[in-house]
Image 1 (cartoon, one colour):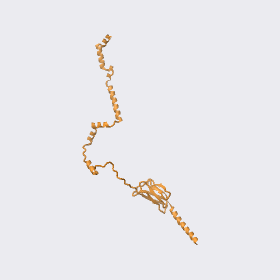
Image 2 (cartoon, one colour):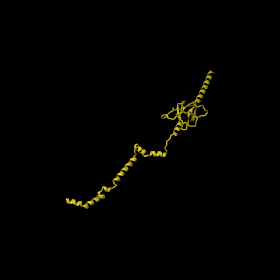
Image 3 (tube, rainbow, N blue to C red):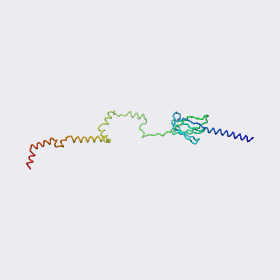
Image 4 (tube, rainbow, N blue to C red):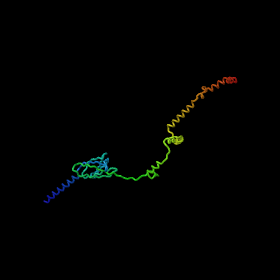
Length: 218
């Protein structure tokens, strides 16, 4: 009789352990949508890891959706740059699917204040506005343009601004043109046959008989 009781007790224990083991190993399709806390903005490409089942890794898509197979009781960890890590435990559900919406908390870090340049001589923006409005410039656009285009200003700019290639080429072309023009202004001065003064001098020599006297000398 005692042997029968022991046998029934072992069967009951095996049944209980088997049911618990079956419950722990229940497989579900785990799906979810990941957003930033307090908003409807999706967190894309979140890294997902199943810490309870071989550290299997998954990744959410660009819209924050994910779906993969897991077990009831598995601990799922979600990580993303700029957000705190989130851990989710898959509960025991009646169906073979479990869907949820997961909110990730953004990491907000306050950076130290950076001051660019030396401190301004004005205590506030209002004081700066008053000083600026009190300025007496005394020039309008026309006077400013005349002052910038004056001969003195242009001469000063010509001494410090380098010449461009187009300006150098234009100056060289103009110089060659002037040289050619000066050379061809009066071509008769270079050719005695086309020089009227040379012809006049020759005619006067003939009239005076200079050439005849030269022949008589010889």
